[in-house]
Length: 401
Image (cartoon, rainbow, N blue to C red; front, side, top):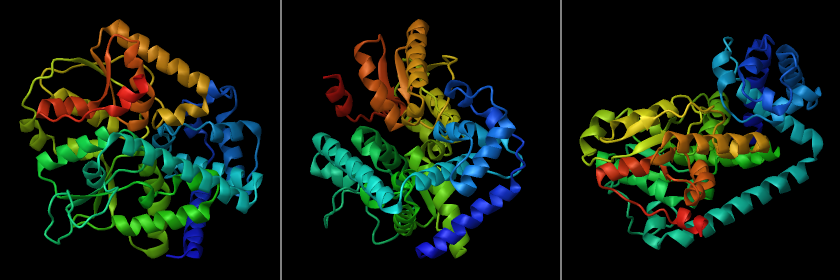
């Protein structure tokens, strides 16, 4: 698929949503962002009408620009719409259009390249600080004639496990995913890292052309399994592929090379096979750090923790917003207060562990273990402990130091 075909398909999808939107404002009313962003008093109908204007022209009224810029990708807008529109996708397009209006294409391209280069460097340094060559190869970051992955006898794997990029900064999480897949007997191939980019950083920078080219290249690589299923870890990659790239690719080519399933939903779908492997009690009072941005992931994570013998799952009754912690950076003061409130609630509840799902949440929260009376872990560490599996969290040790 060339870029001309992609751009035409992308524009067609946007036009369809613009036509379908009734400007009722339900998406704005359902969103947790307007109040902390300072536009809680704005008429929701005016806000969404302004966003549609930005999508068309790259500019619009201040409340609409604020809503688009402050989006934390919570996803409440999607379920609120009854007209087949994905408001979260339209907000992403609005941000793309604002970026294109503010800067010329060469500047956008430089910005995207710089962001991608910095991320790649961070991933490379942090993963290599923590892993030996064999572990890097297992995560698809080194190639050799002798692979440490499950033998596939020249056949396609059942599934592709797509790590994304940034989980490689906390590689113990990705390694636990592979350990669990091994115990379940799933035949997989690992893909991820900067060489399998989803294009989200370039898209955020306003460079849709480079973003689509990178994503199309990765789509072709990922379409290599017998089931046509890609298990994804990173929520940002999941949203970028499932809401932006795959539907556009399908519209342009008439084919959808694969379906993408979040790892937590994949595991919950195999809970009957997983449950007999949870042989060891893990006597912990656990609270789950929650983000609702990918539908069903929080509920799946809760089901997995409840399946671990000995775990007492505690609801801290805190707001669940955003796709993951890093997306709350659009409202830094709000983010800081949410995190502090959650830590204080966890202490008041007397939990033994605060468990996160995603890697960015773990990166931001884990060093608080030094100052609060409970462990901060990824929930797969608890699942792994029950299965007799352990991976050392070197990232937390480094950050605490």
